[in-house]
Length: 175
Image (cartoon, rainbow, N blue to C red; front, top):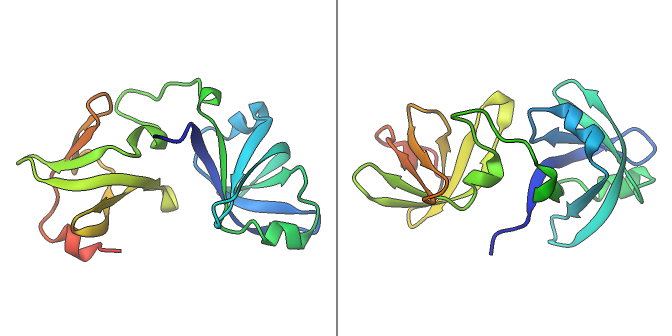
């Protein structure tokens, strides 16, 4: 069963002395944070809890969030590595043509044009403005750049992504 939440941000570290956390956002539209009230915190241990987003501010290419119930540096530090997720219904926007939300790609089967099944998209990473698909399959875990030159066909309804991988990419990028 697929998760009914969407990854909004990943907690990097505490910021300041009042329990705020510095996060890496997984949204193009930072103003959407103004519309979000309730979030789910998924801790590295797997524990889940809901919290209220009390406020936020933009900080360079990331954001600083203030979450209800997180009042100290120690409490903020304990959230390092946690995911901040929102309910899918909070994402009412549709992406522009040729673009996809990360949650739409997670779980899709990755296959070559010849039909070889490479695995499934475990998650979508967005370091430094690029998109990488983390694929888990029989050959292990590896990263696939999420660019049209490699991801030739994305069929969300059909549940698959057809890729044209450069030779040796799977072995080179093995995690």
